[in-house]
Image 1: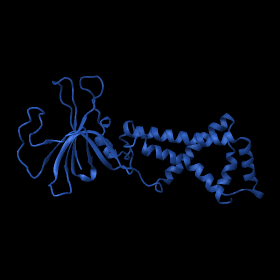
Image 2: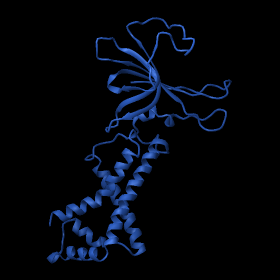
Image 3: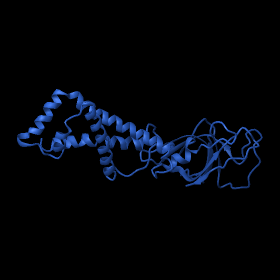
Image 4: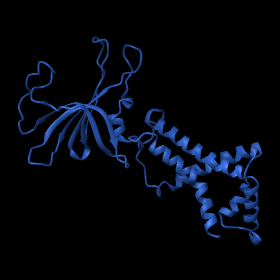
Length: 268
């Protein structure tokens, strides 16, 4: 008991900080993790945020007259049970008499921390923190349409680009690498935040071994005649198969006379 109870109490005390960290890094979407340090390296920030949350909830519950016996819990956290374990007896009696206070306190701090983490995550993706903190996953900034919205020169809603990629793909068989291009329809990250695979639509390919000057556009599709249509609604392209990657953001405006918006090229 002398060791188990302080460890259990310490876990509950630090839980809000861990939940805040998890919500901030993972968000609510599968492909939206933010890169960060290991849990051990982040232990200092976890402790700091846990302390802030407990200070706020301790003040709020004390103001409302429903505070747990925090003055007793602190010595217990340090392993000091008092003479004849009087402090432990006191907290157990109070827990038995007012269980809803302690349950509500720890559930409240945990829920508030997780929701705060989700809010920070959203702000890092699209809000004021998006360009101020170096925690943004580069793949999200590169492939997300929402992250690359531009003001409409004609007024009205912002313009969302179509993300068009061209990549050299290693088939790892006898054939030479091929050039694949298409519109990004979706993309997914690994749990570590690295790119896993991309889902393309309107995909085309051509062999690099048959390099030649650009051919005439196909009269039906308008595509360079050197490229072959990859038949199907979706083409799954894994990151491990890509040798190089070129990304182009295409903005379409209603007024063709307007000055064209800048596009972004990136290679990796």
